[in-house]
Image 1 (tube, rainbow, N blue to C red):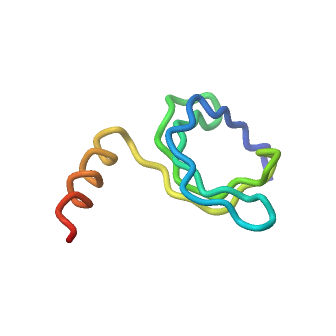
Image 2: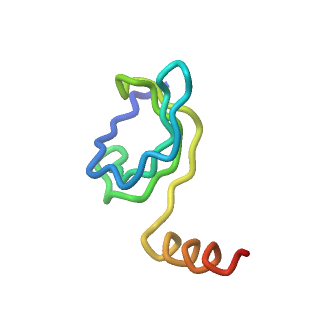
Image 3: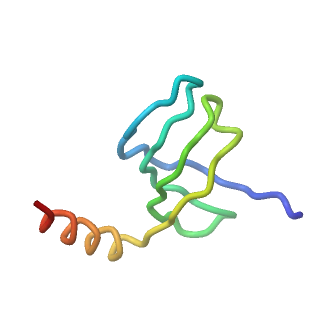
Length: 72
């Protein structure tokens, strides 16, 4: 499996933290040198390991924000 390279450009929000120190975060991440995307996933305390996540373009993030604002 090829090496996965990533750079966390900005931490937008830390949503939760587990007893083992893993955090669920919304970050702006550049994957393999590509343009950064918004990324929601779990991260180990040292940021060397990560869980499965979802990446969103800025347009997708705004659409999600609009959909969430309509929830009761």
